Length: 119
Image 1 (spheres, rainbow, N blue to C red):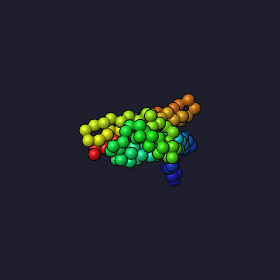
Image 2: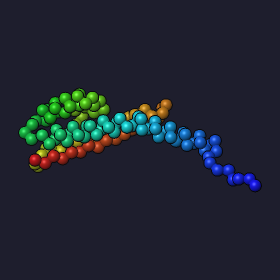
Image 3: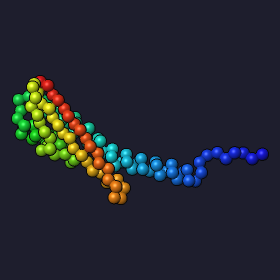
Image 4: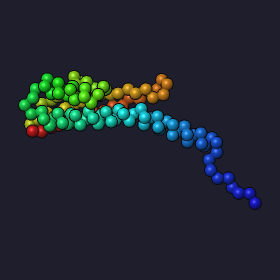
């Protein structure tokens, strides 16, 4: 009596390996951008919490120093917008990053960092 065949065929394995390769490629190329955005967000929160009594140029200078130390390259301190609101600041650091993915295919990642610090 013959047993029924179980498992993946060769074509099935090729598809599984191709999908795993694409996902790992995406993780390797996009992961550092998300980590960098997390660093940008934490720097902006720290600066915004200590923003009382400082001018915009002082805040921009302090952000640029922190970006230099943390080796942030996707956004500049001059791209960050400060809005004075009642009782504090609103910090807007919205930016996009284009990451080469495969050959002539790029992935665009959009980051929205809006921080409101009330004093």
